[in-house]
Length: 321
Length: 67
Image 1 (cartoon, rainbow over the protein chains, first blue to last red):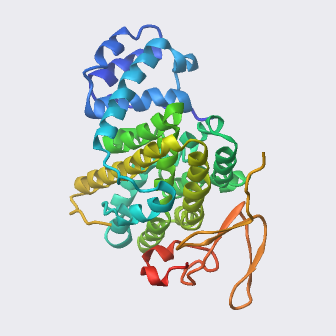
Image 2 (spheres, helix red, strand yellow):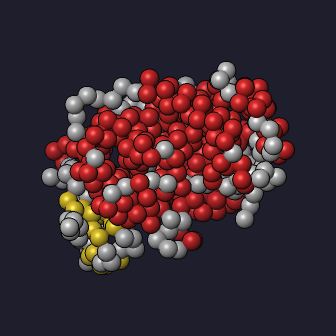
Image 3 (tube, one colour):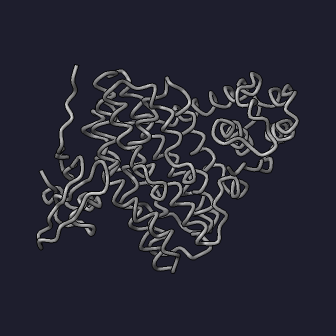
């Protein structure tokens, strides 16, 4: 299996961490740098620490996944991230999640990268977007799989019904993150999620960090499933726009196929996520409704921040969805 | 304890979820095989992927959406 490479540092903390990981013995300087880390530096450090739980890195001991000092660093960075995410969150008050979340999402007016790709993007902008998206799309659904043992019987069965489809219904050739890898390769992009970390904006790292934070912490299972619902509910129509934009620019069929698959799959998955999965969770754990909204809000908010960051670096004026 | 696990779920304003392997015949008599554990069948009749749902119902005015 491919072993990811370590990325380039983005500040004092990530520099300490990336120097210390290959040696693997002393993380005191990394811990000392953690409390004052911010922005790109903190986001990259947390992303690297999270990756120890997914695929690890070439030249880094797998045992460091649970090294106590690194877990402490991870915890500090995660607390800071969760505090910021909760401070931003202004969900609607008093609205039932299952009945109202899809309508609430439709009413939000975030910046739409899919709309830009549909009508206006050039080839280089799309390639830049694919590189940044690859951090998530090449491990699509994996953060959600951590939830499975933490759910009651009906929510667990419902989540597996959705995840089974995400993972190709038993056929590796239909597994979604493999479809994205095929699409990248057909475009001449290296289909490995370590390959493009250095060019991904902090906003992309933060999207991934939030997903992993929600996935790794059992107490945040409500936020993870709320995020899943909002993610699926903002995929089908934008994926159709991606298909049109990619066809307009003459991108390969393999990449178009990835987005075409999501037009159909996510029209199903959004209904499953809201009705059968979140519905089953709330039936057993109604106290998690606030965290469902927190997760859904965070999904839309982080995508909006990512979209603005990408448009800004392309010098494109923002347009609402 | 047993749980509800219907074969069909009608989503308010949206598609019909259909569990299991089925053949769905469209308005022109053309059969379409389901390929997933759950399929969303279009109820607004305006899907570009008909008979499957493609979320087109979301861009319709409320009165044109399925009940």
